[in-house]
Amino acid sequence: MRKLTATVIALLFLATLSVPAFAADSGKDSDRVFAARKNANACATEDTVYFLCNESVEGGMEHYVIRYLDKATGITGPLCGRPECLHTDADCNAYVKGRAFGIAYYDGRLYWVAAGDMNKYYVYSAAPDGTDHRTVRELDGELVPDEIGDWSFQFHREHVYLSCIKNTVINGKVHESGYIAAWPLDPDEAGFVVLDEEGTTLQMSTQLYGDDMYIVDVHRTETGEKSPPRFRRWDITTGQMEVLFDGQPPFAGGISDCWVTEDSIYTVESHPVGEEQYERSVYRYDLADGTFERSFEWFTGGPCAVGISDDLCVAVDSETDGRLAVIAADFQGNTVLDAELAAEGMPRGLKFLVLTMAGEDGENMYFYNYNTSPFFVSVALDGSGARILWP
Ligand SMILES: [Zn+2]
Image 1 (cartoon, rainbow, N blue to C red):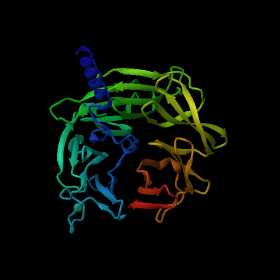
Image 2 (image 1 turned 180 degrees about the vertical axis):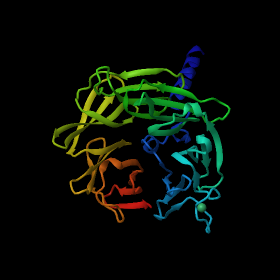
Image 3 (image 1 turned 90 degrees about the vertical axis):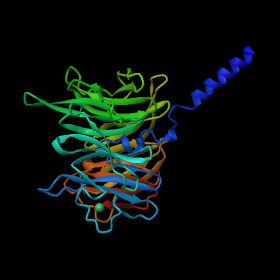
Image 4 (image 1 turned 45 degrees about the vertical axis):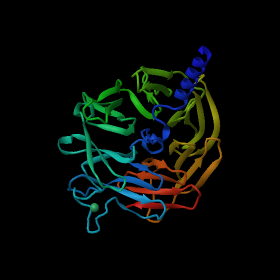
């Protein structure tokens, strides 16, 4: 009897271990492929990509339009089913008044944050077809910094997390600090600050994975130099912050972006090897033993924008005449794509820095260009080309 009880307990224990409280398909985990990107304004379901576009006109009210791409038909447009609609006022299902942030697909619905009247921030949600708009909650004003850069709003396990660089002007000098706040989606529960660093953060990426938020940052050291990357992990259930790595990694270059797996953090390191030339490698940090290993040497090229997501490293590299190359490899180092990024209607002479990876869905990668002529573009991973989805 005793033995049987022990076996039953062991089985129950195993069952508990193998079935987390929120299974991956519960829909309540952050869709990191899109949501963890900085300035993330796109998300996807199996058959649709959604993206938020700033369609304000000079002198007019700031507003955004939720647009969609139907993957099967290739049809794009505002997420509004009214045939006569001009999509220019709040009666339109696709219209978002004010500055909008971070559209996400979470728990079967679309979620986003927008700054409305008096600069108050609200979380909104809608059905995937754009109907049934709801105001989920207000974000306590004092927890949203006035000036934010490199922001992301990530929806994960009944909360929305804001991570950003907070810009504060003190005695005429801008101080940049790593800042993270969270709000339960339940409007009766208060928001709280997760991290509010001294004003020395130069770069920060965050990613929600299971019960944890992973924070990778580069800051200015006491002697004014750029620090090596620091890895931390914040337990969303206990509120404990743990430093995973804060030392000298086996490389001298800087890192951009990161991707967390069950046992690893992957990141791309780059260091100069000549004028305007950089050598890039993918490194894996082992969460169990705290060591780095170089997974593979990726490619050498000019300064470029790098993104790393679910088994895909992506770079957009500018060439001297303003053409853009897009280079992608999987985590085993196999080159998936190495092609010129050209699409009908794409402006010439682009600078690489303004092209931001918005996400990928296994068939296409998506990029935003945020400069004076903004656009949203998809690039096929099979090499069949690129397509401007907006405007
Ligand atoms: Zn409309």
